[in-house]
Image 1: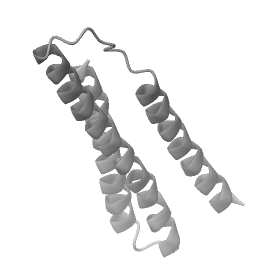
Image 2: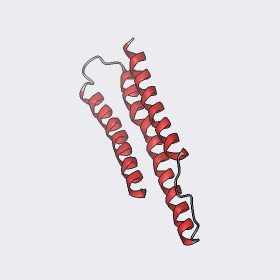
Image 3: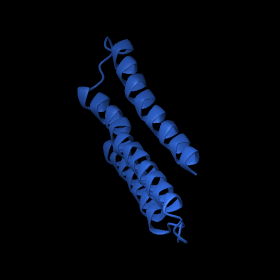
Length: 109
């Protein structure tokens, strides 16, 4: 499960960096056109919002790994299941997507 959580973290971090890089290169290629500077900041904000979410996923994975490893070393009977952590991470990811959608909707109005 540690590798699965790290995989999700890397995908989110990669998407975050790609969004920021693409919005920056997109703004440079369209400098000659009359595009407002605020649009570039809003495009980069999408990537910046995803980065803390991916860091939270990484921290959760590391915490769970070290907790379970110490439980195995101590031969603790359990419980090894965590229900709250994935739920909180899912809510955080959903909130970040809703915030990104709201920002885009606000800019279109």
